[in-house]
Length: 186
Image 1 (cartoon, rainbow, N blue to C red):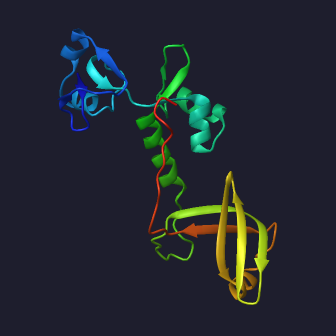
Image 2: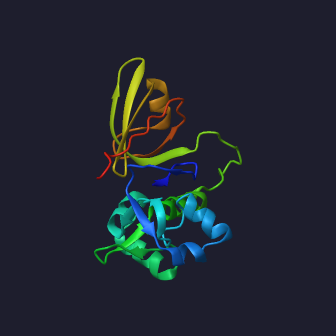
Image 3: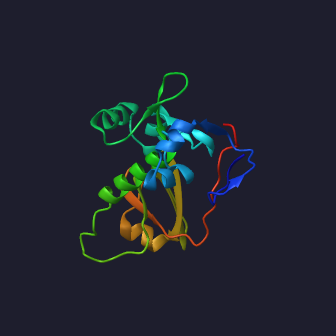
């Protein structure tokens, strides 16, 4: 028996862990709710879905920072960590996601011109390639580990002065977004 995504008891094929009766009895109020919906990794009792945990190095890679930065956040108490069965420090997936949102909110500076924008996906990087013809231009940017390609008019590329080595920001507003996850058990 385990919990389904609505907090109801259900048979499950998810990786689960057991919580002892002493811990179950100690849970009350918000703590119990956090355990039932999988936000609290400290509980062990009835079958609960195991939330993803990430090693310090993986957390750094996902946030785009060094593992030393993640360790500093853990030491400062900015990011909570636990120890896995092998004795390694790990960060709970929900905690990591919340921290990523805090970082993004802090980094989102208001536009210098005071104009509000609906496109919030911004990738700053270096222009690596510009291919133009008489009408269109294909501009490639390397934004950290991501390659972003934009098609625009040749006139726009010229007005922006886009050439290999120049700094640019790709602003993305997509109507279709595809989300992929790794295979279960990875």
